[in-house]
Amino acid sequence: MDPLLTALLLLSILLILTALMPWLMASTRRPRPTREELVSVLRCVRCGYEEVRKYSKGDYVGRPIGTCPRDGGQVVVKVIYVETLPQG
Image 1: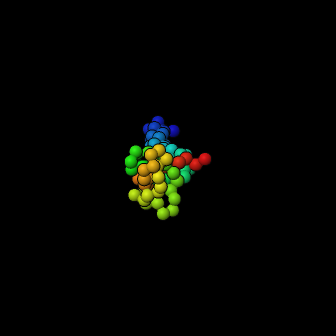
Image 2: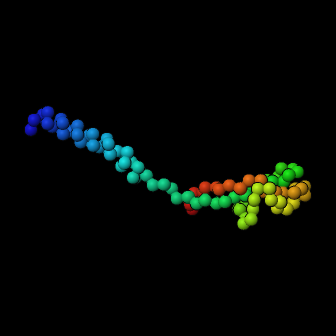
Image 3: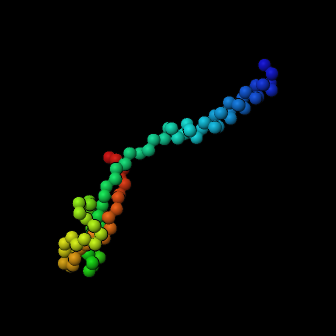
C-alpha cells in the first residue's frame, strides 16, 4: 500500500474521531436527578428573626403570618423562592 494513501487514511480517521469527541463525551454524562421545592422565608419586622419553611398555599410577600417567638412582633413572609435539591 502506498505510504501517502496510508497517511491520508490515518489522518481522515483522526479527523472523524476529533469531530465526534464532543458528542461522545456529552452522551456519556447524565444530568443528576433533582427536585424543586417552593420555600417561604418568614421574618419578624421588629427583631429580624427569620424562619424558612415549606411554602403554604396562599403565601405572598408581605403576608402577616403570626407573632414572633422571640419578642412578640409581627412575622411576615419576606421572600418566596424555588430551591433545587438533589434527588434522594
